[in-house]
Length: 235
Ligand SMILES: NC(=O)c1ccc[n+]([C@@H]2O[C@H](COP(=O)([O-])OP(=O)(O)OC[C@H]3O[C@@H](n4cnc5c(N)ncnc54)[C@H](OP(=O)(O)O)[C@@H]3O)[C@@H](O)[C@H]2O)c1
Image (tube, rainbow, N blue to C red; front, top):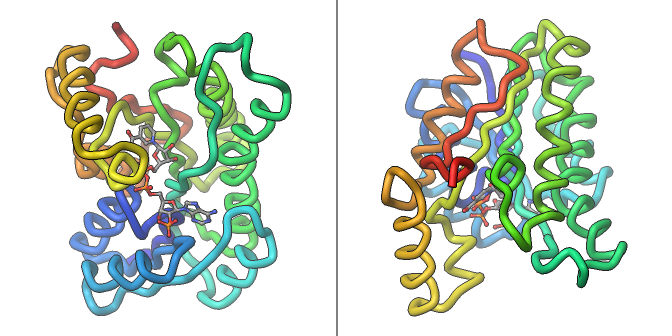
């Protein structure tokens, strides 16, 4: 079966993707930033799963990781990065640059390094609902995720037969939020987010992973953005 790389596959959405693809019989390689989470992820995956420590800010570490594993068919990028959240009037240019660097450019660095090694398969980027919902305070994230969306179509044509898609999550219960908020703030935020969206709940990592699996497995899907946001972009 076709081998899949999942960058950011050691936690949250990326780990759920790795678990789904591995359950379907695909060899998976997960890449993350910290040793403890890489070890925990490998323990949560079938024995054949492989792992790499990389820094998405460091092109050399990414290139070396790809070189160690040979050719592969599918790339999923689900890396979290620094972002600036707040009123546009208070975001200076460096905050905007930091946000694009943390996600948009990190995704480009990983994807470009993958190109010499990828066979006809797929590339799937995890973007974010900030790109399609008009959320005050999220303009920088909207720009970073929206830039990814804008590239999906052109790249689906340029890189064919490799297929290129994005999956755009809404609010998803992942370890990111455990680190960002204490338990009380998290519960209040989850309740507020669930009340806001038509589906009346926050998402699970596997909600997103199911859409990624479609992008990986369905050879007729390319150049598209799949919203997995519980309707967040509508409100
Ligand atoms: N959760 C949400 O509500 C939500 C909503 C919309 C979009 N998203 C997007 O979904 C993606 C995944 O988010 P998540 O919630 O699953 O986050 P997460 O649980 O924190 O996972 C993030 C992953 O990225 C890796 N990573 C972070 N910085 C890295 C770096 N410099 N180099 C290499 N790997 C790095 C992490 O590795 P370590 O843990 O080892 O650092 C981890 O594997 C992100 O792009 C995020 O913007 C999330």
